[in-house]
Structures are given as C-alpha cells and as structure tokens.
Length: 206
Image 1 (tube, rainbow, N blue to C red):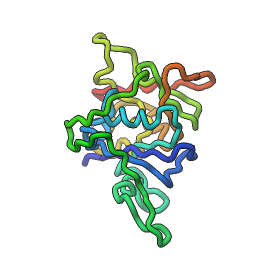
Image 2 (image 1 turned 60 degrees about the horizontal axis):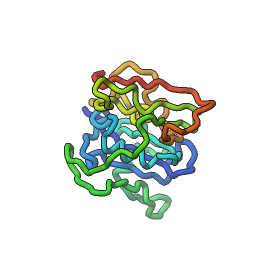
Image 3 (image 1 turned 60 degrees about the vertical axis):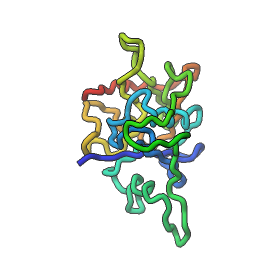
C-alpha cells in the first residue's frame, strides 16, 4: 500500500530529535499528494513553504512516514500529528500545530499560491548536527530551469522510506541520513567553510 508523509518541524533552537512541540504540514493543502515522490520536487509549493520556515532558522526536521517506527510512547510521529491534541499525564497537550499556507485551497492539483523565497537558486540545505550541507539543486537543465528535479530536503530527512508505495526507489545511501537532525535552508552567501558536502543526486524516474 502507499505510504503517506508529513513534514514535521521541531521548535527553533530545539535539540536533534526534539519534537515535543512540533509543527507539521499536509501536502494536500499545497496541491500535492501525500506520497513522498508526489511532492518532493524543486518548486513544489509544500517544499517552498518548508524552505521559508527553515530559512536561516535551524530546527529539527523529519519527513515522517506513516509506516515509520513508533516513538517511545508507542505511536508514530505521523499519527501524533494527525491526532492534533491528546491527553498527556492527565493534561490536554497540543501534539501538532498544523502549518497552513496563506491561502488554503485543499486538494491535489490546486495551487495555494505558495511561491519560492527569493535567492535560493544557488542556496544550500545545511545540517547543523552533522556539519554537512547539500546544494538545493543540481545544475540548470538545457531549458534553464529546475522543473522536475527532486528536492533533496524531503528525501534526506525521510523516515520510513522503502516501506510503501510512492517511496523513493532509487539507489542512494543518503535517503533518511538527516532525519531528525537540526536543519536550515540558506542562501548562496552562507559560509560553508568547514562543512562536508553531501551529494544528493536523486533521480525523478527512479
């Protein structure tokens, strides 16, 4: 069966893997499908929004699959976000704060108008936990754009990939490598001195 994903962000300043307070997004609200390879592309509106949320703002990130391993509390992170609120130690706690686009227009294929932040064409995704970085996209194609290129962020942070339909099936050793790490998105003028580059050459036809 197909596996669905929710991008989940911890609080800015939180430690690696700390999703005690978390924000999540539903790709349907951004006009895309819930399966990993239905929304993991440069220029996708869901990714445009997540880029903005991470722009020079490091925070824990995971693309939580609904087939991923359970958390210590016995529930997957995906299901916790779905529930929204719950009872923790006898008190009502907010488990997930849904990140809505400015002009919600739910439904696959419907644009919500979420444009990409300026200045990211030559930018980076930076892992502050592992001191690594990845370029946001490969070189321009012959047409001079990025259309169809796989976005590295969702695959690098995917938790549960390979367990359901719609997952990334290509040969890569870095899928999920950054799941739950502290991540930011940075423009081209970011100082990457001392960081190791990760090559995320994901193929959209894999």
